[in-house]
Length: 305
Image 1 (spheres, rainbow, N blue to C red):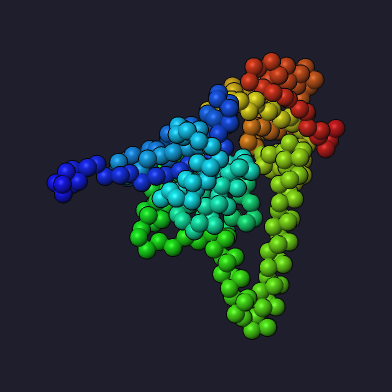
Image 2 (image 1 turned 45 degrees about the horizontal axis):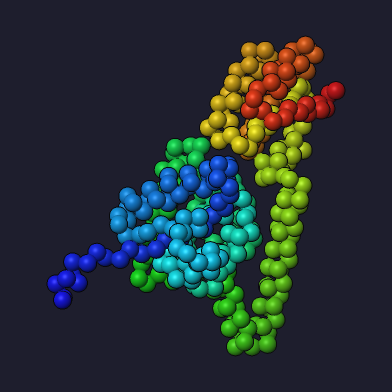
């Protein structure tokens, strides 16, 4: 009997992946699949061979209520990797459940993505699939994070754990210390409200971090010559978008000479120091607008016009 048990395959640990999934064929689904295969599975297979079974909500094939199964994975699995990209409400709900359980979780986020105030202080691994160097860095960072959280003596740290610690401290603190704790808590609450209101405004008006950075840039450095923005359809991958932008850059340089190009997410700002003749400007706009990957072209008013 003991010999037969010795030859049984070792049961794998479970790694549950929390992320926005989206509909089949959508940009969100392509993003989720790329992240799963190119970073998470790549690292687990290369450095933690045969140790983990990787599970994502859409890949659960057991019968039963999907919500209950997800919560079971969040409460019981050995490891959770959570992608905070897109500020998906379901993702943060699931992160909160995992935080309550005080078990290992690794946060990741697409480079440049917004991180809510409550979890901003906790390390999140950035990644960017438009750059092979960034991809290698993200893989190395994830490997180091997993090496740390999988240690037997690892002690998780998250907002829930800290909040519980604050409650215990206040309950046992002297009156003067309790007052200080209350004041710090109020400051934290107000900062969180300010940042959350900013993010609600972004969602309400359809803005992205790129939109905000572009507007801030134009406020600091308004154009004095000809300037316009070109927005690429979000369904295009970053590699495809970069090819479109490079093509348009070549056209602009051939027609207008020196020009400066600034990338803000899916939007590129083109600034030319001089005010172009109408014919040249219209040619650039017509060529850019006719490109199948371009969603919108906008003229930015010049201070000298």
